[in-house]
Amino acid sequence: MSEVVAETAVEAPAPAESAETLVTAPAEVAAETNFSALISEDGSFKEGFYQALPDDLGSHSSVQQMKNITDLAKSYQNTKGLVGKKLEEFWTSEDPAVVAKRKEVMGVPDSADGYDVALPEMPEGIPYDETALNEFKGIASELGFNNDQVAKLVEWDAKRAETAFNGISEQVRETTAQAEETLKKDWGTKYDYNLSKVQQATDYLGITDNINELGLGNNTMFLKTVLDKIVPAISNDKLVESAQQDTLATVSDTLTDIETKMMKFDGNPRDPEYLKLVKERTELLGKLS
Image (cartoon, rainbow, N blue to C red):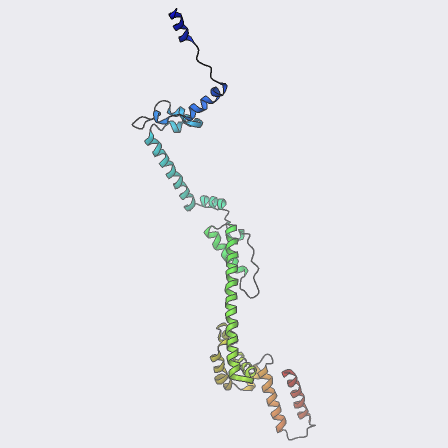
């Protein structure tokens, strides 16, 4: 009787597993793959190592060529070095074909004409012209800048130029105001007249533009020197004759000369010569007003 019971116990089927357990078992087994058991103490890969790799990596011939951990590390090192070398060659090569490809990848035009960057709108008086922009485009092409980079740099440079110009303009205004205040204090009511005489003299000598470029037009010491030393050395007749347009000094000096002639005139006031002087004096007074 006991033998029958024992035999029955041995052959009894194991408890049935749930459907959920049967479905998830393979995934759990795969997730728990113990790779350390597939690697020998000397670092070599045991049988079954390649098959245990996910995503069929082990089926690739390049992977199967690696027999141990050392091979794997060397392969990684060589691959990284090769990629770095290739990238360095691509960015530094002078080969025309590589240079052309590099420009294509970076969006770099072959010449300045290839850039679609317009001349920025600048306030009046700021020197920013097409010539300077084209020169910059040419340099940008040689350096390998793409269109967006050039546009940003032109925008930055335009703002820099405007800021610098405004700073210089403000400085010139301050200097001019200070010079005007000083000269008005020293020259008094003759300020406009003296300033006009100075300009007459510099115009006569042909140096007015040079003086303005050098900033001497606001230098009180220079202006006083011209008035005291240079103006007396040039006759009024030469100054008036050389003037291309009427100035305060020109009109004033001419008026003084005419009035002097009228005072010294000994003839009849109805004389045509005297009447001509009267007419000229009237016209000059009108200009002064």
